[in-house]
Image (tube, rainbow, N blue to C red):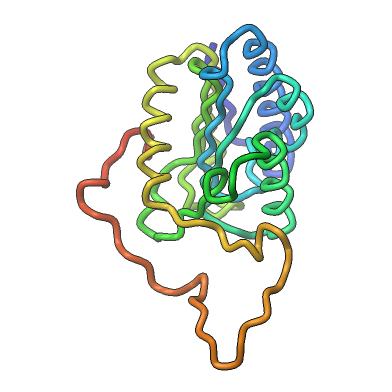
Length: 210
């Protein structure tokens, strides 16, 4: 079943989108209870931790834990930091033995922002949204939810793996909300420092544009 959410009043659409993501996660949890660990996986490519799928994951965290579901996320923006830390805390509770770089990464290279937001749930459920570079207040409000899309999920997982491989670890101070003093004269790379551009062979992965 595919549901298309169209344009409308921005605030009303925002809440409706989050509610739809919560509903989708609930359906996934029910299905996942009868499947093995390989089908209890979630991947998220999101503009920020305030995106609908992230908010739904946080809201349904306890049910996801009870069902043995794990998740990984790639974010284009690290703000707002409070929501970033909230998302990371939820990802950690879903997979307490995993280290931060294996749970969340930062698509800091500007060339990665052409990728569209997307989420995969198990092997048949997925969602696709707007390009990550678009301002949250200027998006086209088009979102595709599909609950029977094995091919879509397969392409989504390939896109996630490609983007994951060229994304960066998120600075620990942002995930934990702590400040690490620097020795006098020490150099520390700024989050805004230039980064290595993509290798040509990694461009053009699937499901990055509608």
